[in-house]
Length: 387
Image 1 (spheres, one colour):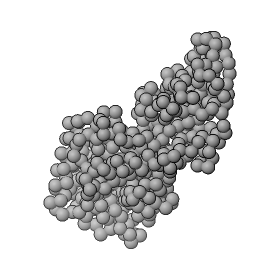
Image 2 (tube, rainbow, N blue to C red):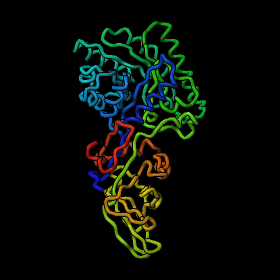
Image 3 (cartoon, rainbow, N blue to C red):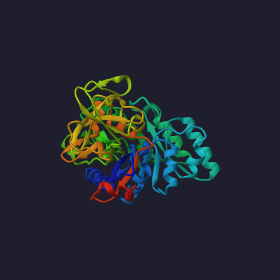
Image 4 (cartoon, helix red, strand yellow):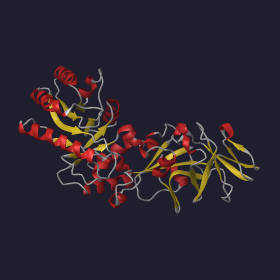
């Protein structure tokens, strides 16, 4: 077997398509889907993911900052792109020039964008962000109507949408989220009474789509759900979602060791008996959580093998003494499935005392993304043709 990558992520675009279709099936016909592809599409590769989703008639994308938006524009993504986070001074020129939609969080930003749009003679689309209880970005509900008026009356700004963000990330009933929703509905009623526009009202991200809370409005913003990540309490419906990413490496070195042999930095593990240690070329620089040392495992030949010693920057050691016939070049699964055994990202995150989003967003530059459009996965030996 020849594996061209030291560590790679298989990205199942067919699973991505299935997830989009499933999410659409749960939405009212009038509700649009915004694909949130911030943080390099949660580690999956924003450009390739956005190209696939655009081919699936997804007409709106959400990103975290202007740099991510400009990367998509440069890659030929012509759909609506909304910068969900804040822009900073100096970014207005490119934002307006590349026809990007912007979340507005302050009165001063309204004036700056209107001035730049007038200079370029090009209207800028904005979404007024309401802080109904997240405490992060957005104007307070008491100021929302006044700012909506300012945007609507500007000849150089278009009030394309109004949004909020729920602080609760559980799919279970959350009274605080319900209170946020009620505050948002009050703003909506006030804006609509004055006829100020805003055709797109949006609040629901992945967790809210499975909470039973009626918050779809005109647009929803799934991120993790696109990639098969949902809250553990999301219920049976969420099982229809499929993981899009699996993570793999290969054995590059094998060593037979005696009982009592120290393994890794600070000798945090000593072998209980004679065994075989496999070294794999992946570490915390690649996104393998440091906390998996001496507590996590990998899949090899359809079996679990424990991670022993500390995870280092570039390498990790695995005890394969109970797995017969392991050879250098053998594929190793860090996240995903190998035969009947599965190692989901949710389990990896729990062992590392974190959340699946952090695990996937931490995948480093050395992790090759290998995209598969077909439902038929190629053999490992053919990976080069899909890199």
